[in-house]
Length: 274
Picture 1 (cartoon, rainbow, N blue to C red):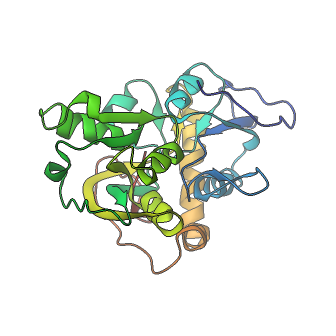
Picture 2: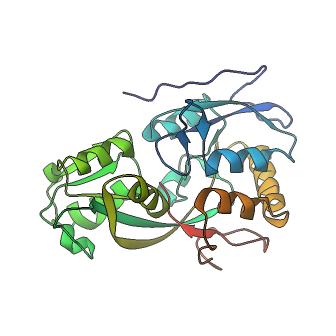
């Protein structure tokens, strides 16, 4: 399916507005736990959802509506004024910067490789994936790793790579033996490993960061999101949300990285990104 949107407007939302003070429409792609997913009642929940709500709260903006899409449809929806901000573990990279802008980063990124929990396949590096059938969600960093590091280097045939509209579908194929491994974001992989018959074989360090995506002409909204991020970090809300959604001890933080403009208010948390 091609990324239908959902959600109920709460009044006077206008995607594409450039001034401050209006309601904004947020977009995300569920099926990416614990960042964005639907709970048992069908409600949209997750770290990205709570974080954006908290970041927007001290600003002059309000979130009037959430719309859901397939991940690969989010940037087109933003550029076509269907939404005003993307909150979907979106990796900040040069290719995406050609078409959209980003807030300051709020999480650092690595990829992980999932295999069947009871299978014999135990890869420990990307080279070990050569000759096997792989899966990833279309448009994600995981898909990019497979294309750039394996297919482009003739280590994997294109016919051995399956892409999906949602990672949930790729996990089902992995459990059913239709693919040998799935490449995806590390915390998402860990979430699936705790709930499904899959396990993390190894982590591939990509050193990326991700932020909220906005249109290139939305400088007022960009400034507001960066200000809100700073308040959320300094006020302790970021730490609370991280503990709520990821639990355990805080991951290692990074003190540098491309585009890490946190202004000394806190470093991006190590994890992974779309």
